[in-house]
View 1 (cartoon, rainbow, N blue to C red):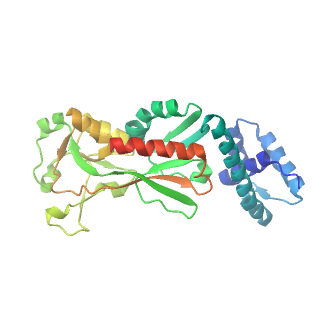
View 2 (cartoon, one colour; view 1 turned 30 degrees about the vertical axis):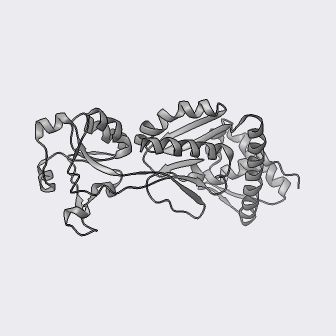
View 3 (cartoon, helix red, strand yellow; view 1 turned 180 degrees about the vertical axis):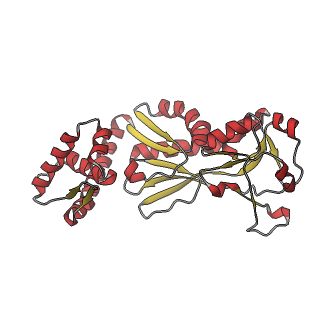
Length: 301
């Protein structure tokens, strides 16, 4: 078989995206060109690799077998190319990063100038939103997550830690007063998450005399589906919210945020992970980014 690895890589992206048109948009190529490439690949293999129906695409049994072998070949090619290139000029190429908006603003944006200074041939595509991406389908190289990652095809490296605290702005406290006890929060304007209900369960501190599994269920006066917007709402005096201390550190130091009820609510720290697909975590460009962000966050967190 005279296998073209570029064609194999395109086949893998079509399989991951489940759509010829999505793969074409990603490559800025006409759908007809992608279709011809797959037809040419099937002709070389002598078997049908994909079922094409009005409902979408699916792999045949032969396509599953081809995909497993093609993934190893394409990854080996990419690793070889990166290893040879790093000898010439260091890590290079695009790295696609998925990260929450609040960490994108607090960590990634200020860290990029020094990353680019160190590795001038790197390029970073930042996808800043709060949803959990399907890393293979969305072509994500690195996801920075604060929750425990799951998936047999994922590699997770802890790169920092974070905790959460209740905050309000001085303007809010001047207008509505400062709560002295969690019971007082019923009379206050709380900002909660509409995207992740778990973030609205505020665990008690062990010092508070509650059982470990006790939580305060926050009832929102204002809701947001975006952590960066939640921070902005607190800074504007809209209400009280429980915020990531990575994002709030700068505003706490400047006096724009005031911590509340620290003795009542849990402030224990949990890992922040860099999550990668197993087959890509050894690529030099990915390792370089993770090393940089780990070092950066150790100085930030």
